[in-house]
Image 1 (tube, rainbow, N blue to C red):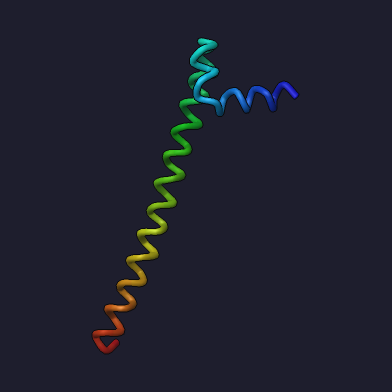
Image 2: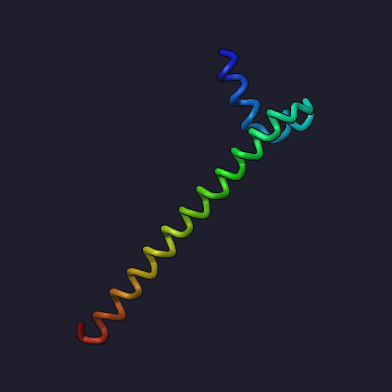
Length: 64
């Protein structure tokens, strides 16, 4: 039960700042950085898919 509560607190951006726990704050910063990386990879995946579709359409138009 404590692990669940600690995880919820770590994922909350307000509570750790109020508590002043530097370890928890570092953990929260790591979680936020992971979220940013995940969103970046998702956007990259969408961009690559769009590029592949555009290249396919261009290649079909070139008679390939």
